[in-house]
Image (cartoon, rainbow, N blue to C red; front, top):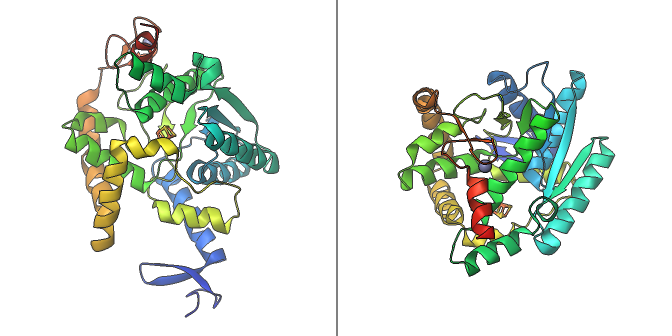
Length: 305
Ligand code: SF4
Ligand SMILES: [Zn+2]
């Protein structure tokens, strides 16, 4: 059994086609660039900021987008927010610094400790002690989005790249359905955000059609210095249960995740059209929100209460 293109040892079979490491790398990068082109994720005038974590997904997105932006002579920089999850965060930061140094990418570093006074784990335990049982991933997602959006806007970045992949997105679509929050899905899609606002920097997902398994293989073929273990906080997440269920289902019924995403994209524009004009600004901090007070201010006021 050899690579269908070049007779080398195959590393993966995709839709019956065997690919060696080099052919798979080319296939994967082409797929990401096609998503960028098809959904017009990066405009020639864009100043691009990659929200990196040091993990395989955002590192793959960073590497490919950096290559693309270099070809187009466009500005690209990276940003990381240290969550303060012990050794996990430390190793991710060290790894990302190595990647940025190797590919000459300017890296901006922030931390929850500097921004909010405490690490993610400490914030979560203080909230719990005060009777607010908010999951780590909720706190992490809300506070991280807040810091990233503010930094990107203040520094003239016009697109914020995230490493979200096909698995993440299909899980989120299902989670919103299961919880009866279908309108929340209007924020999803390769170009995130339900409404346009100058204060909201659009988040783009170049890995939108890439399954997590392919990203892991790409990262290994590219020998990126990344940790392949999951964030320790994931175990308590609702998402994790949906992830396990969906992976089992995909194994028995290949194509399920693609089916979820493709049918979701068929109705996405309708969902977005119903959200038009609904943007509000937090009365406390001025950031875009769907309520009177944004989620960040809500969490921070609970923390101080
Ligand atoms: S698993 Fe949850 S806590 Fe960990 S990085 Fe992801 S969102 Fe944040
Ligand atoms: Zn606010």
